Image (cartoon, rainbow, N blue to C red; front, side, top):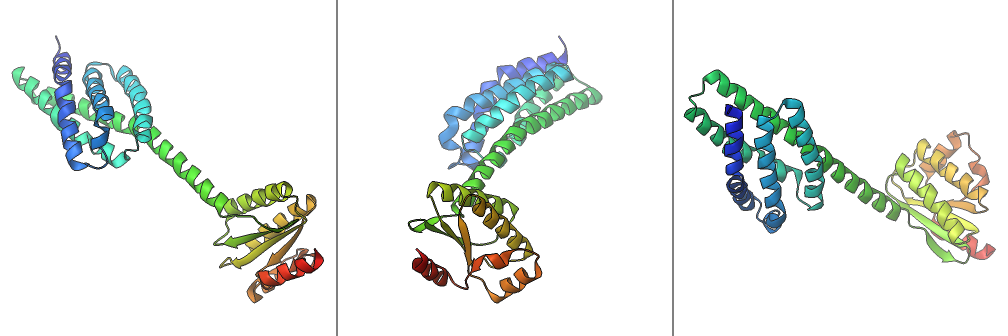
Length: 273
């Protein structure tokens, strides 16, 4: 039997012991985050020790396939368990230490030469690098998707259309307006205008700290889109610097009713409605 197969079998014999030691180490380091997840994480650790054991005895291509399959599935699972990537990757040194001890033990029994032992250790390092990579990819994807979903929810809340009276609503804009937020504002303005059967829609810029030519162009597109669905858009919160920026642009803003304050805009609409 080759040394690699002996190492593989010895690791398999100790897989539950190694997994338990790593569980104790991690629960001690992350008592709040991981301790209550021991029941779910322990079998995954046993599984990973098994992956390491088998990978050391397999050809490189076959080993990578098994690691990839395990990593992609387990990465998603650990992300859903609401663990953190840093805590999970923090286990790697423990696997290296405990499995390394098994390698040293077998190497001494077999009186393995330095060169052969170096080859074995290098293979373990390569296998661990593959585990880290394939585990991290789905974990990062899951977290990225979660952040994107949260971002979308926040942005949707950042475009609150407020009905004021029959046929009239206000969109009080607060904070910076970038390309993505402008798209959300456009969608919410159109959707709510149709849903609420609006005749007038007031875009209030009082809470927007910087209104440059880009923002004005985006607002003009929103105004034009609203006009196409039969809604007259009006703009309040026009400061002197905004007025100067509008004048510099070649737009039809002169056809839009504008007001320095939201109070003025609403007072005018009350008279008309």
